Length: 255
Image 1 (tube, rainbow, N blue to C red):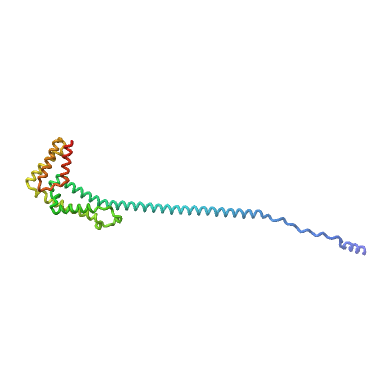
Image 2: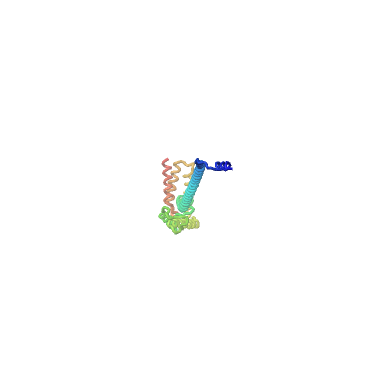
């Protein structure tokens, strides 16, 4: 029994040698490289997207600015063309007045130099007749009223408020009145003797202005015409007509 007990005691007796303290388990450090790279690439991608967006926005703004500039240039060009067209229309409107004036000048010149008008409508150049006197006065007034186109003249300007257009209109009215009066009178006031003289003058003019006459024949005809025109009492031959005859006579003699 004792032996068994002793054995038990001997088995139960603690080992006097110290038990080694277990070392703490060491964990491997976490791998942080991969998340940082991901964050870096995300940042780069965001920056790239932002840069692309900024470039697109800049291009869009540039195009908008270019479109605005183009529209402004187009509007300015359209405005310039419209202004030029308006100025051309204004100048053309003023030109209609000067053209009408020139037409009246030609009418009077023809009345003073055309032999048919002189002999068929002698009252048209006889300033002793009231209507004809008014015609020449209106012609003088129109000549004295010629100005440059007023700076304030527009398409809506009333021509009746300007001196020159009014004078030209009065010239036209005076011509119409004098012409109608000359047609009414015609040759009724010319004596028979002067009518025969006119017939001879017409015959001489046919010779002088004909293609078959010699220079001597022309000169002789113009000399006789000048003398017969001086004999006319009823018809007042204008100075222009006499100068025309003198020039023709001089040219015939020079040749």
